[in-house]
Amino acid sequence: MPKAKKTSTTPSSRTNPLSDKTANATKKAKSSTEKPASKAKNTKSAPKVTGDSQAGNYLLLIVLNGTEDPMIQRLLSIPPDATFRKLHQAIQISFGWAGCHMHQFEVQKQDPNSPFGGPPLLRMMTNPDDIDDSLIDPDNRKETKGDEEVSLADVFEDDRYKGKTRMIYEYDMGDSWEHEVILLGRADAALGKRMGIEQKIVCVAGEGHGCAEDCGSAPGWEGLKEAFAKPKGDKELKDWYKNMCANGDKKGLDPWKWDILKINEKLDGVSSGNLRGLFEPRH
Image (cartoon, rainbow, N blue to C red; front, side):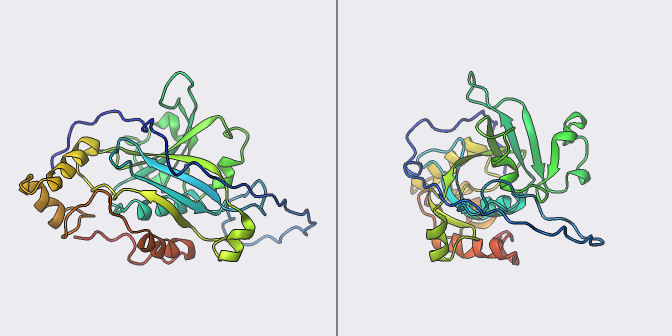
């Protein structure tokens, strides 16, 4: 599908209904003395986890910039020791993406004089060593890490980044869909344990149907919604979405419709590591 001209976008300034209430955990981890672990051959160490290990999951509000009526967003509960690879998978599922394109996380220095972030302090993507220099500036490789090597706590509990940065998850470098990742706080650990979700990734709330793959960024998405809003809307666009779009739907498009139960069923697979069939295009 022809790409629409890319435009700069920022999060909507209207009040977000999902960010009114957050919870903070109150228990602190008890210190313990442990014997040094014996050295293992050919094993990869797990991502380092910092901060309060007895506190609850992080509550992350993720907003897809440039979308409105509705503003597409999800509120996720996710363990602090989850890697950014797991967060990538959770975002793909909860926003209905098909996993067709590259992605990256950027931790950007906050700029009080601009709605956009400053220079990136840290980048994370899948297998950055395998990516050509044409896609990664050689000068920025030292700030680029594999997303499976870094846990959420490594960033959110690090004083270098805490309260000083903004986080962007960019998907599809052509359409350049930027998702702003906002840490609202921590969930109640005791409640999470009683509900059996303390070590799971869960979608708590949200708004809006996921965007169509390859629709041409925000202007293309608006055009697609307009086509389905009118009985005699652009037939070519409708047929493309129903029959060719990687995450399309033969039943059509309702911009407000989304299924939190189906999302959480798939997120169970991310939590357990069973990803079979989760990222297959629908057409």
